[in-house]
Amino acid sequence: MKALVIVDAQIDFMPGGALAIANGDSIVPVINKLLPEFELVVATQDWHPANHTSFASNHQGKKPFDIIELFGMDQVLWPDHCVQGTKGAGFHPEMETLKITAIFRKGINPEIDSYSGFFDNSHLHSTGLAGYLREKGATVLYFCGFAADICVYFSIIDALNEGFKAVLVEDATCPLNPDEFVKIRTELQEKGVQIIRSNMIISQ
Image 1: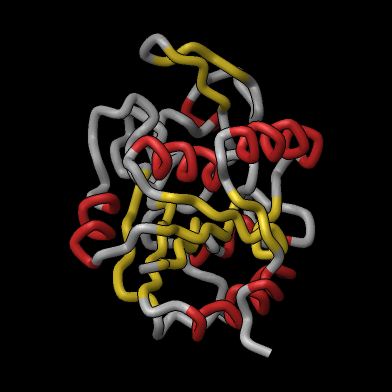
Image 2: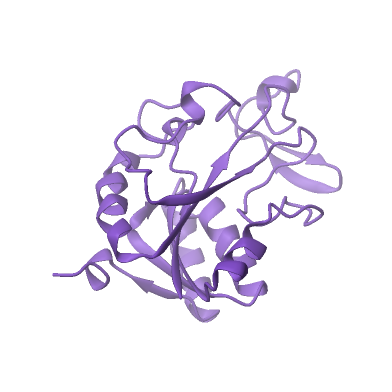
């Protein structure tokens, strides 16, 4: 069975948000058109506490996009975003959410970031997403959402490592850094990820 995985389609990643991605809101209508094509739809949601160590505001003298070492790993420091319970942490208001059967929240532990929808960045704790998808019988995962070069990318890598087939719906995702995504796109294809446009799925 195929499943649609919507990664972090949240207000703070849209234009005007705390960590805005250029033209991010353009993917919302595409996601909405994809929904009827899938029997199973799940979503991930960045859900950070205000004291999260990945926020530049929690490190004196640091600014967003500085890189520090945190628990033995390089950590990009982000603007405060997707803080639990805030408007910015919510899904885009125009995104249709009735088809979403489960939401997996990540980045809850203040000590470590979680780019992937499956695990934190140290792979110490699972979100439960892989187990849920297996239980539902999903074998092929179609990915969309934000950001193509960060959370979508790491979610796809973990999906492959968990034994799923992965497909990236390219016009239903946007990168934070387009130049970085060019390299990542090639890497994903070399790993066997299929990269398609939404019109290859949507019934005519």
